[in-house]
Structures are given as C-alpha cells and as structure tokens.
Image (cartoon, rainbow, N blue to C red; front, side):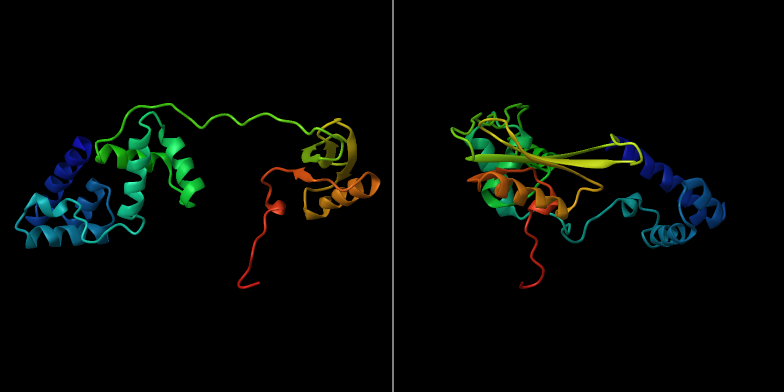
Length: 215
C-alpha cells in the first residue's frame, strides 16, 4: 500500500509540472511511463480538482463484477468457525463439493482476513480410504500413458484395462493418439471376459458428459 502511494505522489509531482506548463504533456507522459491519452486525461482531472492529489487515487464507484455475494462469504466464514483448523484450500474444496461454488483459496483467505477469522491452518481433507475388489470382474481399472517407445513413431499411447482383484491385464492396445476412439478397449475387455460392475478412470474429458443446448 505504501509503495502504491509513493507512486501516486511521484506521478502527481510530474503531472503538476504539466499542469503549470513547466514541461509538455508529452514529456510528462514519458517521465510517468503513461500513454499520451491517459496523461492528458489526468492533467485535465488535476486542473479541475485544483491540484488535489486525491483525484489520482482509485475510487471504485461500482461493485467489482467478480465480487462474491455476501451469502457465499457468510458460508466461508461459517465453515471456518465450524472448524477453525480448516485451511483455505480445504474450505475451497468444501464449497465446491457442498455448494458447487468454485473459489480460489486466496479468495477464501482474503475474506477470512477481512472478517477477522483468519488463522494459519494446514488441515486438509482426510486421505482417501484404500480398498480393493473382493472378486474378479467386480472393478476394472482403465488408464493411458504416452511415450516414444516404437521406432518410426514420434509418440504412441498405451491404453490398458486391468482387473482390480487379480491385477490381470484384460485388454491393452497402442494408438497413435489419446482420443475417444481408444474406448473401444472397454468393449474388447467386456467381450473377452465379462461385464464389470465398476470401471475406474481418471478425469479425462472423454469420460465427461458435455451437453450442448437442450440436447
């Protein structure tokens, strides 16, 4: 804040030289590192304000377009009060999970500081519970990885499906790219063995449903 104020004072001194015509507006723009148009506007503002430095300070006349509603701010504060050890990323995750509201952890921090509720905390979410299937065919796992493994190809993608219980490789193929076409491996695994109860995949875009319009 002090650095910004010093810059405003320095700019005010340069612009006042232009107001009193001790230097040209072009020279004031060069010294202040401003565009000529912006410098002319500031000089005119200073003349109207009779040299008052306050007219150079930023004064918001309307709420920020991305300002969070007070209701969301109250939820953030309530989540912190409910468990003061929660970290900013933890609270941001809870907002997304419970209310489908995406907020950056830094925004959470700023809101808590302003409300006087901020504490330096490192508590994160509890780690995921480890489990495995109890029988063959209950859970399949599918993933892909890319690399330059084959001579003559710059890069290929290996798509592989294995059984979670036995770790048996059920299907695996190499493709020249990672695309929706690779999901044919799922059909191959189901035809060769049996239909799975659950299929574990990552968050790749081809596993997400995207609706266009009212389709």
